[in-house]
Image (cartoon, rainbow, N blue to C red; front, side, top):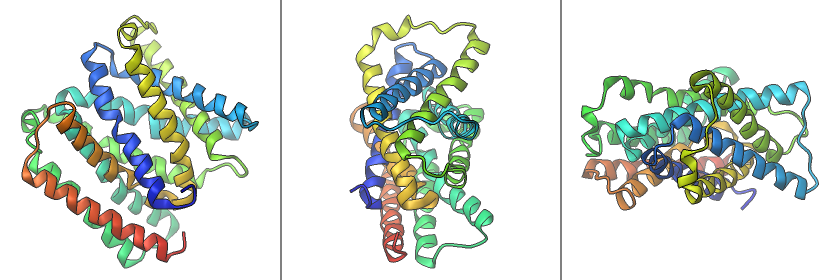
Amino acid sequence: MLNRPLPLLLTTGGLLGLNFPLGKLAGAAGITPLFWSLLMSAGAGLVLALALWALRDRLPWDRQHLRYYLVTGAVSNALPNLLVFSAMPHLGAGFTSIYLAFSPILTLLLHSILQGRWPSLLGAAGIALGFAGALVIVLSKGGVDSPGGAPVLWLALAFLIPLLLACGNVYRTLAWPAGTSGLALAAGTNLGAAAVLAVLSLLWTGSLSVTAVQAVPGLLLAQIAITAAMFAVFFRLQRVGGPVYLSQIGYVAAAVGLGTGTFVLGEHYGLLTWLGAVVVAVGVLMTTREQQAAGK
């Protein structure tokens, strides 16, 4: 499994998709998106650092690694999570998750421009098909609590989520410090995100109060465990599959977000939403086939 892109993709995307119902429940408990993002990043970073220690690996702290942790933590973790958790009260958990499905095509464009080459016809067609499925879902609006009536500002701001994720996907590969394990980068990225969010929290609220979290300790532990597990697999997928293939976790996460929104949170979606999800699945299978043919 550790060298097979598809199981890594499904595992990472599935774990990522679970963030949406957990984040919505945290918001319902009165925890701000900023502070919830901070706690999940700090907790996951500490868990991954302990795993490194247990494996007798190390967490490098030279200037190159610190820059990587902070940039990756901010672009790939802190800011997207903050936007996700902030948008969910306005758009719904399932509907917000759909925006992740736009990251593959944006990643493909950025990576192709920087590398000066394009993927094979099959790979490009698979990503385009996945994008088309995601577009069908968004245009259908899923029937989730009348998202069409949501403030236009949040509908627009949510598009920053896939853009940030795409930038992070490409940056992580291009700036990956030589000789550093994925687990070490996962720990450092979460700690870097926590540092960025802590500064934002202090500037925004002037404090780091944990009072609200005391009412949902189990929810927080679940969020930390899922985030730590997701990032441990995430960086392995980055190394094995590359940034474009990895970006398709957005498709998987969107499907999981739709499922949990329906069966856990009681949100409702129309037929076009589910047809779009099927199209997304076909697109993932096509790009997986292309990845195997390329020998990755």
